Amino acid sequence: MKLYRRLSFGRCGSMKTAQRIRELPPYLFAEIDKKIAKAKAAGVDVINLGIGDPDRPTPPHIVERLQRAVEDPKTHRYPVYEGTLAFRQAVANWYQRLHQVEVDPINEVVALIGSKEGLAHISLCYVDPGDINLIPDPGYPAYSIGTMLAGGEMYRMPLLASNGFLPDFSNIPQDVAKRAKLMFLNYPNNPTGAVAPEEFYADAVAFAQKYDIIICHDAAYSEVAFDGYRPLSFLKIEGAKKVGIEFHSLSKTYNMTGWRLGWAAGNPEVIEALARVKSNIDSGVFSAVQVAGVEALSGSQDSVAKMQEVYQERRDLVVEGLRDLGWDIEKPRAAIYVWVPVPPEYSATEFATVVLEKAGVVVTPGIGYGQYGEGFVRISLCVEKERIVTALERLKNARITYR
Ligand SMILES: *Cc1c(COP(=O)(O)O)cnc(C)c1O
Image 1 (cartoon, rainbow, N blue to C red):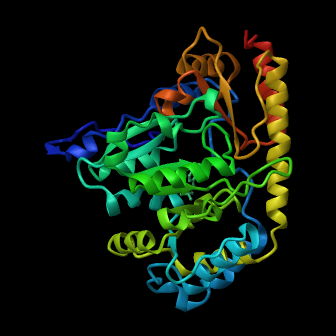
Image 2: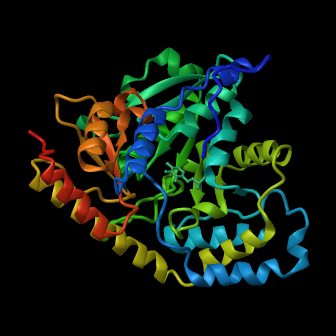
């Protein structure tokens, strides 16, 4: 049975797609997906360390709250487009409680259908053809795709190991900075697992003020951190609210990726612009899901501590296992990924192919996140530890090591 739609590059019968669609990059994991399907068909018990999607279920108190909310016919009608006041108030209280940040629930918060949606739509608010967005490379694809769909151009800010996977603003040419509209940042970072110190955000705010750039900080992993480390909210930095917004999501914090609920918070003009675009396109998040979101943000946070414990244990297994195989890598302090350099004789894609074919283990080639992801693979922590142990044993037996 064919499970995937055929990819059409440019044409579907005689119907020619728009230029903006034709410019979308080809799906970089298509080759690997084919090989995974082939291995599975041959009976290989494939261990997928490629998926960045929490494997544990949503905490039961949140599920139960949805069940009750869905019984209420009031939730069956069109939602409040910008998010119910109860949800936006819960977001404001959450910011206050967890990050000591003040946001006005009415003017400074908008609900999103998952943060990916907002990250992709924000470019429609600010980018005209010829404008530039500053994009981290490697990075989450929604930043660049949103830019392209708006007709904008990209300047890729390399995230290099030598700079702690932080962009170096002093390397951005002045003429580029002057034409730039948005700068996307994401810490804790997908795919590198890097975190950002307060001074970095302060530099980013100063750079944004100097060149009149809007910062879009993607904080999807702010609550997934280890060893007692607490990632900062961008909005806590002095002046941040003057120059930017922060995107957030319930997906990773509460194992709610399938529910599609997130928010953006910060500068009221930017929030208004995003809400205006969205109200004309999507009409908002199902009200019952927002009710459950209030429960997630306001109810017991015990599940969050448990989630952190689970990932920390898996992270330790992966990193210590790879060290035994010759890798010299550090433990990431946050997010759900280990960013692993590939042995020098391989490209990222070649190495991922070897790991799949010799060990039946899927890892994601870093090149899929941008050209500066070459030389790395991403290992995700979204499988139970028994599977991680088996995956590492298989690497060892296949003599896959770092030399
Ligand atoms: C998972 C993830 C998100 C969250 O996406 P949702 O649409 O909220 O599920 C956003 N940014 C990054 C970098 C992510 O990895």
